Amino acid sequence: QVRLVESGGGLVPPGGSLRLFCVASGSIFSINAMGWYRQAPGKQRELVARITSGVRTNYADSVKGRFTISTNNTKNTVYLQMNSLKPEETAVYYCNAELKLTPWGTTSTYWGQGTQVTVSS
Image 1: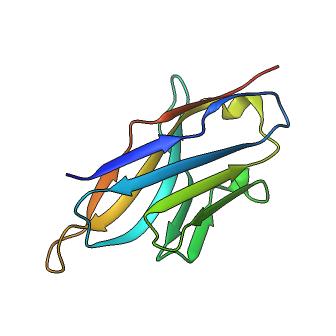
Image 2: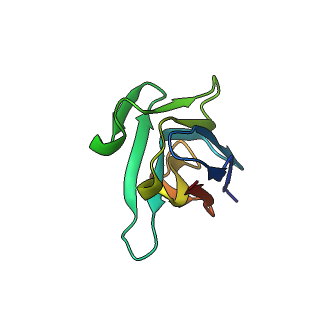
């Protein structure tokens, strides 16, 4: 059973910073990519940032230069450093992982439960 557990969300004033964490656990053979998505009330879930093979990153245009995604040495933990946060970035932030459970298996996508980020004074 694979689990993705997020943490680090909370209330922050406009212009503030937060660091999100997501740990993938379970019987995992390899992780191809991990990412962060967000969903604001009444809106569709959107990609915030993604990291592939622990090295290649891509970001939503709206967060470039302010957010940084990274992983740890074992690549089972992904971080999202968020700076200069804006009120419109209030949303539930979800962790996502594309991984294999066995060497011969297919790549499957897993989601965490989400962590609330509220940007407000």
